[in-house]
Amino acid sequence: MTLAQLFLAASIVGSPALTPAGHGGNPVTASSVTVVVSKLASTQSAVKLYFYNAPDGFLKPKQYAFYKVVRPGGQSRITLPVELTNGEWAVAITQDTNNNDKLDKNFVGIPTEPFAFSNNVRPRLAPPVFEDCKFTVDGPGKVVSIELKP
Image (tube, rainbow, N blue to C red; front, top):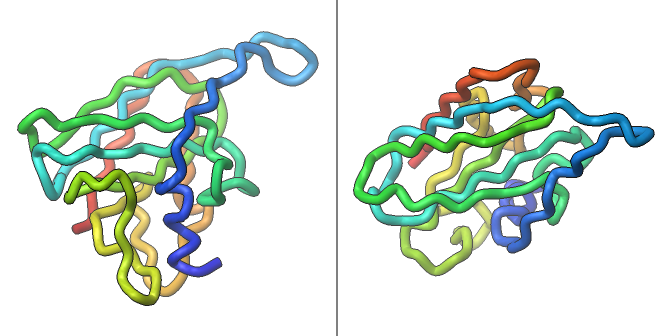
């Protein structure tokens, strides 16, 4: 997977909802999680957070569980409370600094707008993998802090 493909998911619009039942119709336990994104490049531009809960779909087009768009409202960081089913999750984040509703890239496909991943994973030559970015949700009160990379 190229770095260009890494952010293809960031340009796709849609927000499938989490299903209320797990495998076999058993209820799924959800927990409150707070995602804190700091070092925003802009205090006005939209921040897009893509939530993944499956390793095989990580960073692939339309394979995120859901996404959220947050406007920082003049702040240099955002705090987003979400309900996540218990299990393993990873988050990919982009900030649309020129407000054109897409992730801009250079001629070789590398993003020219800020991005980040959970666990503050910083890819060098290849996109990160789910294993490196994942965190475990197993009860309420989890805080996931991420710094945006300019």
